[in-house]
Amino acid sequence: MHSKDQFEGNSLGLALCRKIAKRHNGKITATGEKDNGAEFIVTLPLKQTVDTI
Picture 1 (cartoon, helix red, strand yellow):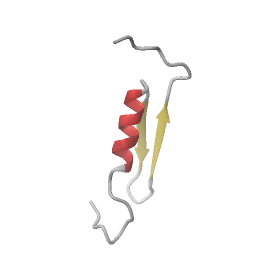
Picture 2 (picture 1 turned 135 degrees about the vertical axis):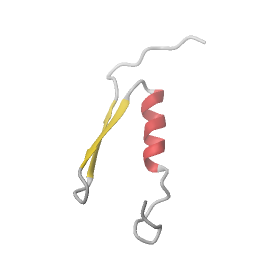
Picture 3 (picture 1 turned 45 degrees about the vertical axis):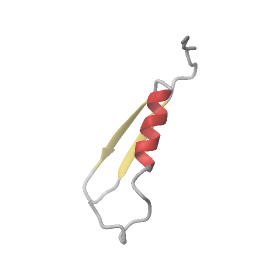
Picture 4 (picture 1 turned 45 degrees about the horizontal axis):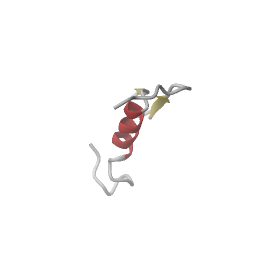
């Protein structure tokens, strides 16, 4: 992990994206290489099913 003075943010961004994706029956995948950055792909379905409670 990097110290807070090296990068902006509060480390909640990806966790929030994951929660949103799960809530919409989607997923997040990630690829990356050391010292070359990372790519995050968020996939959401086009149509949602209606949950009955």
